[in-house]
Image (tube, rainbow over all chains, first blue to last red; front, side, top):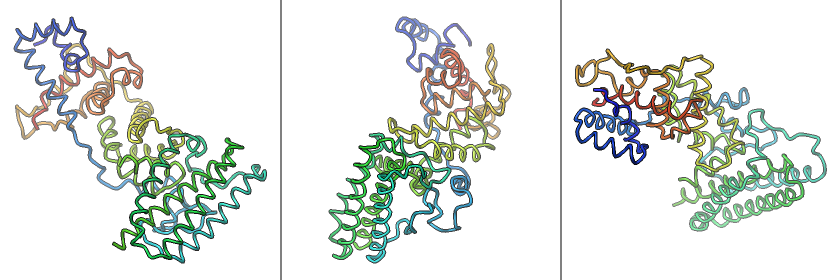
Length: 233
Length: 173
């Protein structure tokens, strides 16, 4: 079976024939059992392709990827060793999804104030000749940080987490809530300073990086506070 | 879910490896399956790693105009096509009624020896295989595929039809 219409059957299945051709093919199909059978099989092939299930690799590929992101900078088993995290100037971070104590939060807030204040001061006082310490493999930040799409994504995440915390903070003790609020205030201040500095110097790579990093810290703090509240329920 | 992924994408772009690992966990099956179907099962693990390393390096160019998964999938296609060029894989094409799976038992003849649909797909000539995966599995349009492969849309349509015709006999398993 191979007539002049056979090669057009896929286009017919995909709805890509012009009206006149479609009408002519349909007239042919009415009289040609072979083409009708082929058409049905082609439709099944298309359906089968759409139903193919994605399968993960047989082994976990993440360790190999992780190693290529920050080669040689990762203490084994340490959460600090995660790519993009092991920055020399960054204080130790808490393990992911682990609750934290008030003293730890206080220590983090102090470190953050120093970092935020110092970073912005450097950017505002003409120290741009000294490039910021970055990992070689770290994705370039300035372009996307300036992008409204990123900002809106981060803002939406922050709003969602803040809303969740508003509802769940009753499960936290007063001192923890106070420390969380103090940290958020410090972070918001740092964000505000970075945003004001960026208005004066939108192309400043360090400021863009600093803003993205500070926003990331805010999301992480909110996430951890929510996790702590959830753990108390 | 979409908000969480958007947040993770933003975090990863700012250098957060934990967020990037979550993105990896979400998308690795889709990327690995694409690579396996378009290239070769033996290369799928290595190429999948390459895709994610490349994604990490290029996150700064992601502008959020599409979902991260869409962007990643397109990046994976580009990595696979570049790999094929590097390997010098000849772009196989059908000619004049040739059946690339001729001689291979189909499900209806000898079920115990028949090819699995995915195995049959892997045996298609390269050109037909790429077009079939990109169009029928991944959902790209002929115009997009033609641009990716450097052919005219008519060639993409022709390759797709021949791939479908060849795969008809391997439907039932």
